[in-house]
Length: 177
Image (cartoon, rainbow, N blue to C red; front, side):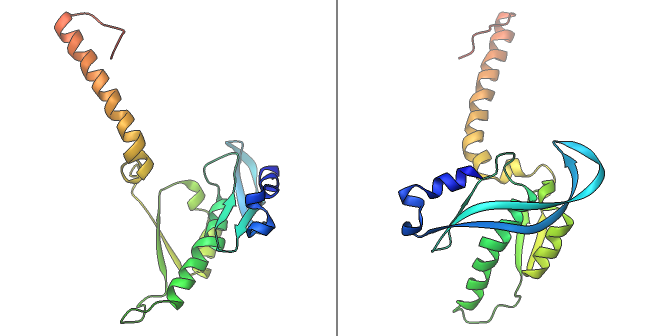
């Protein structure tokens, strides 16, 4: 992707600043939809993703068509989550050993998290994947709770005031403050 390549030319994201340009490929999934429409015949699809990785482990990538896709989720597991989990296990200084060497990852019900190929990848890295009940993300995600929650409060207040005016005046007011 040109965005990542262009970013790597910037002084704060180039090699001398500790960033390296990498290409992740080889993760294949079965494509069941293309451009939102079901495909006539399922086909194998290889996810290719360019990314920048800093010497301290931070990763920058981009996905122009969605918040997350299966390839991006697999990349997250392989480049960030699994190395972090391995480091936690080896650097543990608690009184007891880890009772279970597996990590529990809880996700929403997005289809990108449910690909069969991801289940194999999770098993390889010792990750147990569980899903939230349907329609729970709006209650649990910080962005929804903090930002969108405030917007909803304002909207509900406006609607309430408009309803009160309608009940008191018997007419609709288009200007709601």
